[in-house]
Length: 542
Image (cartoon, rainbow, N blue to C red):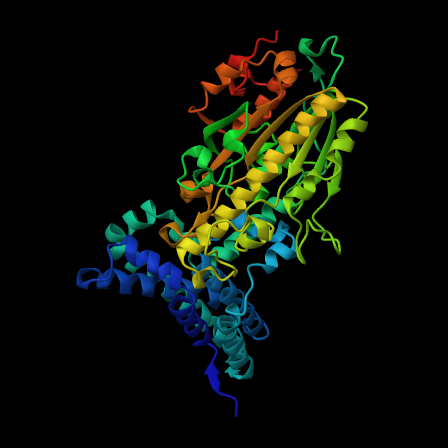
């Protein structure tokens, strides 16, 4: 016989469930941020629990109508169970950029976040409450009485919540002000707000893309040139600067690049975002982090368009989940799909070395000067061990599961470091390829490498990336940045190697990439800002 539930009780019962059982990560952080669990803090913690229950109850009561409340709560139970598992497993807050990252990633990357360990959590917190609710006999009184009860419940909940807030404000305000990440940890409100923020940004996208840098032309350094120029921009994925031995990391993760003649490594580079969906469009735009928004970036052309306006052929080769709109108006090649029997692919993905396949022929057969962007799979987690061939299993024991909680920190870091060591190999091979093209095909070449964002590997119980930028840890924001120029390239564009090397310890960010690329290639345009060009002080080009 179905259990009977009074409709007026249902929102309150659901609110208690949500606050109690779906917010383990929130409560862990809240307890820590308010000084821990001890006798003096018990009133604050109980008060916060009641405050959240009352606010959730008021919100759910607004939808407490026949044919609405049951489907709504079922959807919330299932979605909140998934969100709760994700945060408990990886410690990652949820905001609109995280939703964007999830929506715009490919199915293979998304599947890596799923595991059998998720099944018990989904059954216990998602399926069982949903079935119990669907089977329950919810009794609704007459419409007028129910409406009056609902209005009274909302008013009473908000009134008591207001009193609690006044009583707790002195103790609660500092914690909420200093630890803004708490609001991104509270389910289901965090992902509801995040989805709403994402959809508002998505639906407000303009249909017309404003031109940028249509006045771009090649500067005087190009005059009389008899050799083609090819610039390769390698966009790394999830590589954090602190795990590069070039940046004084204890492990030798850069055995090849550390011996590369002419390589310039800049130690202090900050990313524009903490997720690919933000960082990639931001770094290729002229907006800079402070002015960046998804709408603005998509509503105007970017760096690749300006280079095209200047007469350079632009090619984007992708081994990731796409270019996030950056390459919409240039040639695009997707190299991420595994091919049977291809030694540079496994069953699910392809290794980044595949980005170099056919590159010498592309350079040799180019009719003019080129900019080639290589978008890596890099160190994308949590399946770090899948990012490199078995031969690069150098550090160990390494974590070989996407359930990071099953691995020690040392094993997670070992797998991650192996992926950085493989990136070292790919970049070294790319430079060797460009050197050979310079000799054999009469080409001046250059390579620029930077990562889109970093990664958390368990620091402060945080994993992966995508934390809201304002509260993101440095592990997710500090990224590598390297530059290699052939002798012919340096001479043509009047770039002083010693001057550039002297700037290696200065602070730079993704904001510099747009203008530095134009400056390095001596592109004249009104879109160029010399103050953000890290090459400007070291260039002898007029």
